[in-house]
Length: 143
Image 1: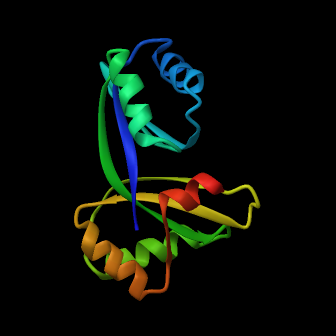
Image 2 (image 1 turned 180 degrees about the vertical axis):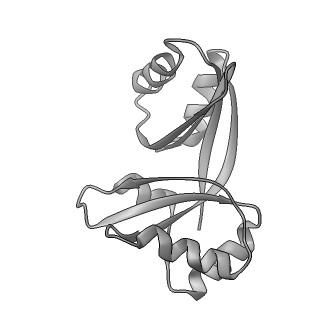
Image 3 (image 1 turned 90 degrees about the vertical axis):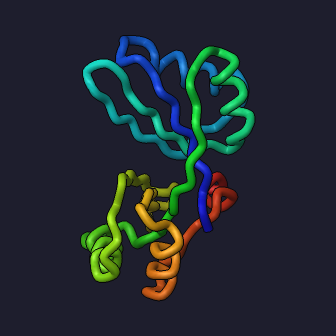
C-alpha cells in the first residue's frame, strides 16, 4: 500500500510555491496533500497529487527538479491520541520516521498521516499487524 509522492526542489524565493501550484492547476492536477520543508537557500515541496506522472512531466518541463518517492498513508480516527497510537506501534518495532505530515479528510472523522520510513517494508508489516488501515493513492485522491 505504498503511495507515490512527488518531491519538488525549489529556491527559497518569494513566488516559487505559487508558481508550482499554478502550473499544477493549469494542467488540471489536483493536490491532495502537501508539505514544505525549507532551509535558507532551498525548499522541498512534497505533494500527493491525482496524476503523479503528469505532474512530474509538466514541472520538469518548467525547469523544476522533481523526484518520486514512496510513502505510507495511515488512516486514524481524528481524535486525541491518533498520531500517538501510530508512533507507539512504530517505536515498538524500532522503526525510524524520516518525515511525516497529515491532513483531515472531508468528513472530519478520520485523519490521514503520511509517513516516510527508513524501512518501508517493516513499517507496512508492523502497521498492518497492529490493525492500522493503510490507504492507496486511489483512495487518497477520492477523499
